[in-house]
Image (cartoon, rainbow, N blue to C red; front, side):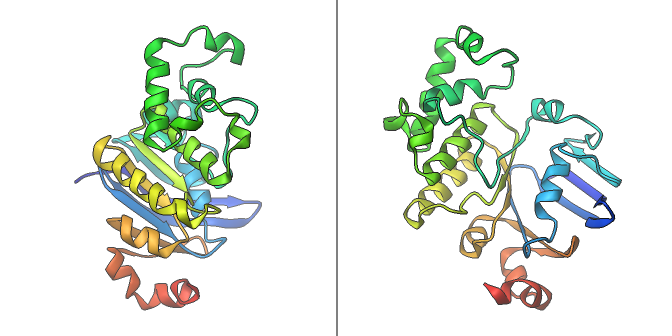
Length: 247
């Protein structure tokens, strides 16, 4: 496999606080890469830098060989690089199908205007993906009435609606009822294997990430502490001291 995301020497500060310091890592095309570390270690900042939410101070970020660190969020999304969030970003007053349709990347008009431009194929794809994540029976329910775990599944389906090349997931299992976690893990793996979507995942649930990722990177205090296979990370004394010892 080759690197589809190549982060080299990335540094990002906020008001003099070093959020990321000289971080270098690679996300392999077609794989599942994990990112772990204590709270405040700079994981979400790095995600935000990759997808263009804020400019980096130094270093470079390449996606499919193209330098993207100076590109706006919308341009990066159109290239096929998307992310989800710890707190879901759905439209609670709209039903699940409407959320799916409004999430499509070419929508540059008002909500009401956009529905007149949806095709039968759009709606068919929306319902297929809602079935994929287990929400087909709830497709016409107000999304705000769903449980938090179901809302995360909806946000995942909304991301899939955009046909991403790479999907960055920020703590996908956080706040989800344990009974839903195995189903979510299965759907993430299937999105990777069946749809060919490369996954880059921030996750605090060590059972989840150790069983999903091919490669794991560990950040601590904004710096890269270690990287390797799940087995190597689990047995790295630096990672144990900084992070795993508390889990």
